[in-house]
Structures are given as structure tokens and as C-alpha cells.
Length: 131
Image (cartoon, rainbow, N blue to C red):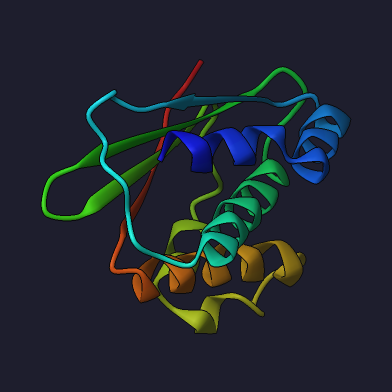
């Protein structure tokens, strides 16, 4: 897992996207996470799509925190430093909401990320927090 998240943090396209928007990315995980079996490319696509989709709703100086825990499944928690619009969370569960907005391409990225997570039997959760 450490190598996977290190690859994510070192991604030039992700660094460029975050720098352009002025958003800080923090990744936290315990030392005890074991290796996982899955498609590394799809896993990186999952997080790239998720971050790209979420960054659209953030402003300069905001932060995005990714934490990972493990029990029977790998659990990845995404926390953003500002509340997301109410209509964003349903997109993770129902495709009908994607094309009912002004920015369907950003919302499609969130939905694609959810599908990748499900194909790996991962649990994906996102929390709104204030700064």
C-alpha cells in the first residue's frame, strides 16, 4: 500500500492538477496495512478520478485527506476541508444524477471512481468537514 500511495503522490499529472488549483493532498495510513491484490493501474485511476472530481469543488488553500484502514476489506476515507454541494454524494450511488448538472464531466469522474472501488470490493466513503 505504501508504494501505491507513494506512486499516487508522485504522479506528475496529479501534482499539476493540485498545484493549479492550490489544493493540498495528505495521505495517512497505518504501518500495519498489508499488500492488496488488484489492478494497480485501475487503482491509480480510481484515486486520480476521485481527486480530479473533488478538486472541482475546492478552492485555493483547501485540503483533501485520504486515509486507509484495513479489516476484512480495505477502507479508504476521503475528507475534504469544505462541505461539498449536497448533490454530489448521490452521484456515487446513482448514475441518473450525473447528467442533471452543469458539470457532468467532473461528476462522471466520481462515479467512475466508485465503480473501480466496487470492482475491487473496496469500501469508499467521503466526509464533509469544515475548516
